[in-house]
Amino acid sequence: MTYDELIERLDPNVYRSLRQSIELGKWPDGSKLTREQREISLQAVIYYENLHNVPETDRTGFIDRGEKAGTACDPSVQFMGGNSAAKTSGDIDPDQFVEVKS
Image (cartoon, rainbow, N blue to C red):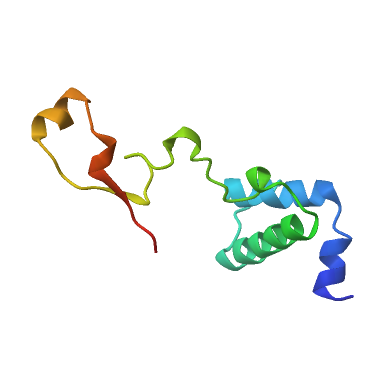
C-alpha cells in the first residue's frame, strides 16, 4: 500500500485523532509526540485535508483574519508612522498603513 492509498483510506476518526494529537502535542493515551511523529502526523493531516477537499477555513493552520485583514492587526501590514497623538487616541488614519507582500 502506498502513502497515497493509505491517506485515501484513512478513517475520518483517525484523521481527527491525529489532528487533536498535533494540537495537544500528545497521543490520546497521554504519551508525548516526538518531533518526528509530529512532523509525519502533520504531513498526513495536511495531505488528507487537501485530498478530501476540507474547506480552507477548517484546515490545520488556517488563520481567520476576517475584519482584521489590512489593519494594524494584520502581520502583512506595517505602520508607516504619523503623529504620536493619533497613536495614543486610537484615531489612526488607515492611509498610514501599507501592505507588505513577500
